[in-house]
Image (cartoon, rainbow, N blue to C red):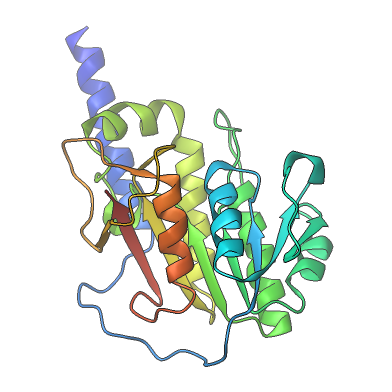
Length: 250
């Protein structure tokens, strides 16, 4: 029994190290980056039917943006608003992504899925379609949600996630997040990757901890989806974290 536990612990550590080395790593000193100028009025939200996506949609409309939501089934959205356009499509279909991106000023992605127990490229392939469409149509600003636990945030989800949740339930999902971040980081877009801790459905607090060394190697760090959405929308007009994968938690 001890040998089995030891072998599993070694596997978890090796996986965490591999996710760290393979994922995007940011320079330790942040400096404001040059960005393409221009006002942002029209925003496409990808993953709008998920937990963070619904918060992005609600808050973006409250902030006065003209919002488009790319969804496979519009009936799942359940939201109507004069400033909202619903686009039926699949992020894995390059043609529908291209059509949704055309005419936008920015794209915000909270893309996710629940196919955890098997190899997947949904996140990376879908993001690759988004990036290519943005490059084709001159849409510069891209804000994308991934997760703590990869790249230079490896091991910062706490012991429970590092030694159980990620290696047992989510290894394929996290490898796809690694590929997703690399697709974004290799682009010439004005991008920001937002890495939250464990997501909750608690109310918006309006205060988050953010930066390159966010998280904990011991305790599980959490943050509400509402606060993640607010932070992501802030990145549409902020240059602080351009070309950076920034961690956020409460």
